[in-house]
Length: 83
Image (cartoon, rainbow, N blue to C red; front, side, top):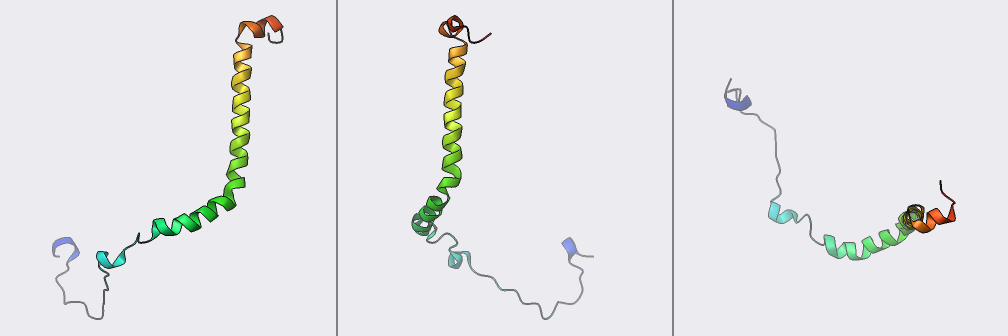
């Protein structure tokens, strides 16, 4: 047995390999230009699915912080609402 799987047998026949040069592929060509139009449409269509929960979460967080400050303040203890 040869080095790294080379069996030392006859050469293989009928196996064709095709390779595209990395300079010809240009995998990111136009990615940002196309995103400017298609990405905006996609974000606009999906905005309700993330904007509403995000806004609701922000409102709850803002309320919770204000309530925490009231509960741990002198004014909150004077009101006597909290034990």
